[in-house]
Image (tube, rainbow, N blue to C red; front, top):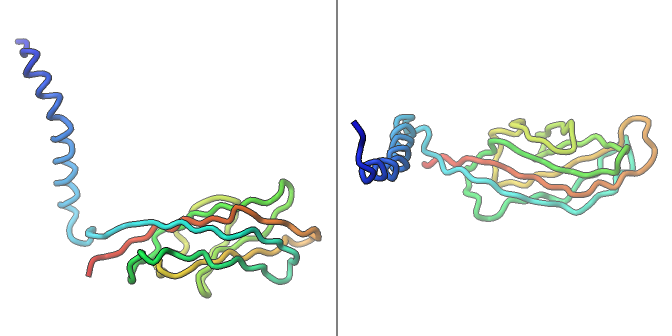
Length: 151
């Protein structure tokens, strides 16, 4: 038996509504621990000249905007840096005394998970062993994804 065209058009029009309702019911069934306000922030720092291997060159603070709620926690960080081809540096991303090693010029890591998202981060660079030539590191950028659990 064939459906009239008007009924088929109505069924297609209701499909997005049914999908959204199913997704909403699925999310509600996860429980109150999933009631978080997630967000992200982006910050950049000016270029740095890295000149030594035995002491680190530290970036300006990469600060979150004032809108990040107190009590927000880092879920994941993403970074991007640029150095001249063939010249590499050892890089870390830090908040206070907690740091993660950045093995590549761009990437993502949950390594700072659980630290306050409303506090600044800093890049720390040093020359690799044996490298004598200074390196200009540019394009310093971080994206912080965070969560804020409702009180």
